[in-house]
Length: 518
Ligand SMILES: [Ca+2]
Image (cartoon, rainbow, N blue to C red):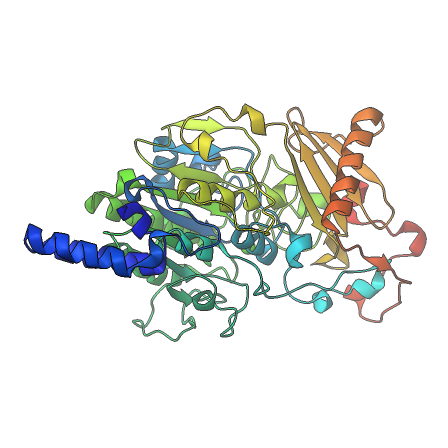
């Protein structure tokens, strides 16, 4: 009965009242309980989509999202320069996925997919900002207009968790609309302070006071730790969405100095970037320490991941732009649909539930998080609201993930991302991964690339011609998915000559994206 009482926000109030009554004598308690039950209609869940499990079965959930952190930017994912002892320990005590993906090659689409549980064609959020960020008029397709705020008719992960009886908080980067209608406070989060853009002297919405010289990652961690303390006695869902390690690359002086004295390794070389990662690692350490201190570790699932690949790998592709890091052995970086742009760390930690020290090679992506957390919270999917992902909650509890290995995962990027100096990180492209195989279809000329990721993680050998059957199979899947989800396609456009050198198109007969040449 009490489990049902916690099914809704109103139910939570009922439960709190009950806990207070525990302090009084038994007779008064029984009378009061009878009164509560009679007066509280929430024993029948009012939510359209959540039927709560017993409260003890609900883990708290903390989602720690890094910004632009690349696949190899952690010690436990291979870095020999960056130092991430707390995250490495989290991985050693939990489960580390090696084929985890973001739904977008940049910030906004991944966040929209993660929060809504839907692929970009359903939300309309497929890139960052307006299509005018880059000089698309020099190219042969007109990009699809991007939706820049998560539409309010979408159900957010925050709303879903609220409906399962969770108190919710989001601190950090939201990037899905900061006005009153789109701010997290209006989208399923009971508490929220958002910030992005600067690591020192930062602005927050709503406005916050903080000591001069405060570093944003530390400020956000303070908020998160405070939230955990205040809500330790009820199920909570906490999003700690760091702006680190996104540019501008700014870090605390004392940490930068430590890395100046270390030798670069494997393309990891920048002491400021390394110091930013160190601050991110400190944040994770503080969160886990808080959980241990409050004896919440065994009842709290902590998820650590990133929103897109690392900013690097461009020079090898002949592109402009600074390589602040390197995603090698993966190809390319942020803004590209090659692995370096979309494969990221995913670590799950819950002592006693998530198997310790495990590595999992089952492919997962951003839209899977919504159904997975709903599953763990004991909820059921919203009615008449398609969720594009699949729950992998079973894997986190030690079950086999074999059934998910051959599932197809899709990307659709109907726009352009420039790289400077007239080069492009990506041109319009759709992508599918199924099993070990990945196919990219570039939409300017329709040509395809096929890679066997098990044997060629660096996407060096395009096998499309050698494996025509596999190519046809994946291309068929991709086209069927686009039709089913009604993916908007870029439209033909006659390229215009522009005066600015950085916008100057190459001759029409040689106009192929840099992506397409390899
Ligand atoms: Ca990002």
